[in-house]
Structures are given as C-alpha cells and as structure tokens.
Image (cartoon, one colour):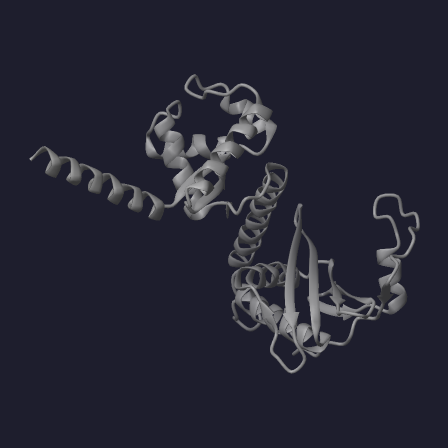
Length: 299
C-alpha cells in the first residue's frame, strides 16, 4: 500500500514538472535607473541597488532558460504601474500587484522573448522596443483623429495609409535584390517620429519583410504624408561583393521627392548637430533616389 502511494506521489511530481516546462514565464524588468529608484519607495520592493538588481534578474533568466522554459521579458514602467493599480483598485505596494501588472505588460506592452541575451544587450533592446511601440501608437492616434477630407469626404488617415503602403512596395520593388534597410524620419507636431524597416529580396522573388515592422514603417510615413510634414526616407542596400548603395527622398507636401546623388552625399556627410562636414563612409556609393510613381493626392 505504501509503495503504491509513493509511486503515485512520484508520478504526480513528474507530471507537475512536465506541466511546468510547458508553462511560459514572464519577468518584469526595470531597465532604467530612474524607474528603479521610483520602485525603491515601496516597502515590499526588496532591492536598493540597480546594478545588483540587474545581476539578479540576469541570474533568474538564466535559471529559467536552463529549465527549458520560454520566458518573456517585459519593460516595467513605474508610472504605468501606478496608473494600473489605481484603475484596478489594487494596492501597489505588494508583490502580487507587480506580478499582475507584469502579466498585463507582457500582453499589450513592450516585451521581448529571452534567448540568452546578456543584460547589457537586453536592456537597450527592450528600451528600443518600447520607443518603437510608442512611436507606432502616436502615429496611429494622429491618423485616427484627422477625420475626413473637406473636399472629397475620404478618410484622410486611411487614404494616407494606403498611399504610404503603395509607396513602400514600389520603393522596395525598384530597389532590386539585396538586403534593404529603410529609415523614415518625420517631425510631427512636437514629436520626431522614426521608423526602421528591414527587407530581403532575392532576384526574381517578392520582397520579404516582417509584418510588424512593415506596419510601423507605413504608419509613420502615412503620418508625414497626411499632415504634409517635412522629413524623408533613406534606403541602404547591401549585396555580397558590391559596395553598399545609399538612396534618399524628402517629403514635400505629402509626396516623396527623389534626392540627387549630391544631396544624398551631403545628408550623410554632414554632422547634424554642428553642420560640419564628416568623412564619407568607405565602401559606400551615394546614389540618387529613384522616381516612385504615385497617384495624385487630394490632400
């Protein structure tokens, strides 16, 4: 009888271990030292040194990975945490509240899968992810509040998104084969919106890009088109055995205007802060932007 109970007990523990390996984990990370300082005001928060805290988080992540667990690292923002606690009516000075907020952030906030990155790589990656998401959300809200065109009645935001999508598709099609790195910079209201897009193309094949990056890039470009902002787009194409090619366009009244080779060179070889010339990058060709046919716009 005792042996039967013991066997069942060991079998139960084995089943729980199996389930544990299939249950994902989420770890909230205070990436910024100022954010960390805000959390030290809570009595139930056990840390008082940011460097030591990061070391402990790193150890936790490594331990979870050693168990074969999938772990998501979520950016923990103390201000958003306090707002979450107020909205849900929970006490912010408890470990349970921090756990609930971390789970919320992992679902709809800035987060990354842990794949063994060292902490000095993970922290900037997570911060960049937060900036990227904030930029996308800002541009999306801007487009949503523009309303309809007084002349034609069309939704300005939707039409701008359609135009931006077509422009990006044409640009990448005309760029040809290679690894393409696109950057779109748009000053809108009091914000400087920046989006990055990576795309791969093999000769004779369609363009391959990530759905998230593509949507974010198109949304930022659409915001610049919709409000007729200044700004522009630069393209860097890399192919094996050939110099990198740099092309550029500027936004003017909602349209992308190709830059000359001289304008591209000047933009890349001038210090943005001082206006002083800087040395051209070796192994790079400064090329004119190519014309991108697009339909006339009413806006």
